[in-house]
Structure formats: C-alpha cells, structure tokens
Amino acid sequence: MASQWFSLTSQKLHLAKILLAQLEQPIEQAQINPKNTLQNEAVTQGVIELLLRARSTLMMMIAQHHQQKTSEPLTLEGLKTRIPYDTQDLEDLETLQRSRTSWWSHLEQLEKALTQPPVPKKTVSADNIIAVSAEDGADRSAESLQTTLAAMTDFARTVEDRHNEW
Image (cartoon, rainbow, N blue to C red; front, side, top):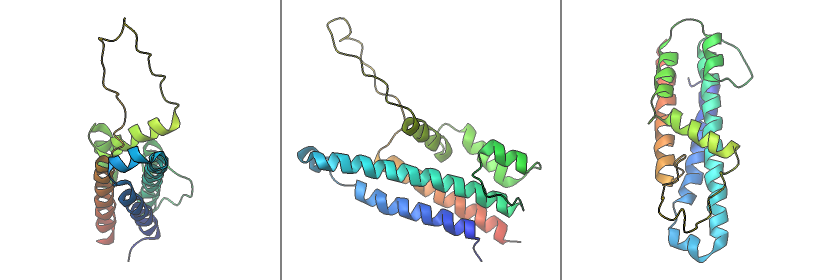
C-alpha cells in the first residue's frame, strides 16, 4: 500500500506535469501575443513551485518511512538530524545534493532564482559592447523542467518501493 506522503508527492508531481504540458507551446505564439508570454511565465513559476513542494513532501515521506513523525517541512540537514543513522535514502539525497547535474541541484538553482530579485542588466555602451556573457542561472526551459520532473518521479518511486519491501 502506498503511503499517504507518497500519494501527496505523486499528486504534486502529476500536477506539475499537467502544467508543463501547457508550457510546451511554440515560441512564435508567445511572440505574437504578449499575453502568452505572461501565461508562460505563470505556468513556469507554477511548475517550479509544485516541484519544490514535491521535494518537501518527499522529505516528509522519507522521515515517515524512518518512523520520524513530523508535520513541518524539512531540509536535508533537518532530515539528517531526525534520522541520526545511515540510510540509503539519506545517502542518495546527499549524492544528489553534491552532483551539479542532479534534479536536486536544479531545484536549488530554481528556488534561488524565484526567491531573489533579478540582477539588473548592464546598459550597452561603446565601452562595454565587446564583453558578451551568457546569462547564467537556472535552466527554466520546458525540457529541463521535464527532465527534473521525471528524475524526481523516479526517485520518489524508488524510495517508496524500497520501503514497501518490508
């Protein structure tokens, strides 16, 4: 039987998937109608928020699987203090946190981008026209969000299956 926390995590991920399908419209439509640009931004931020919420419920699910009854959202550090022994779940999460290409790191970048004001853009002048830099930051493309969503879904299923073996 699936845990209630797994069901809640799956629900958040499924809702993100539904929103993400709306985002995958041609760029040309957004350029023709500025309203589409605003809608795309709203959908993008909605997907990111659902993914962040799914990560929180995933942490709660892991805490519950290890008999740590808690109702407040947990960070990875908070989860490690609640589960003071070695577990595969914590080891997997720490590995994801260390990897710069993992879904965990992608969510960290997305969360940072959403919670901080945008960096002011430099004005173009004759003095700085040569210096060109690509905008760094979290990849908010539909493809990137889809990859993170799929990886999170797989991870949540793996954790749930691991604990259902008992």
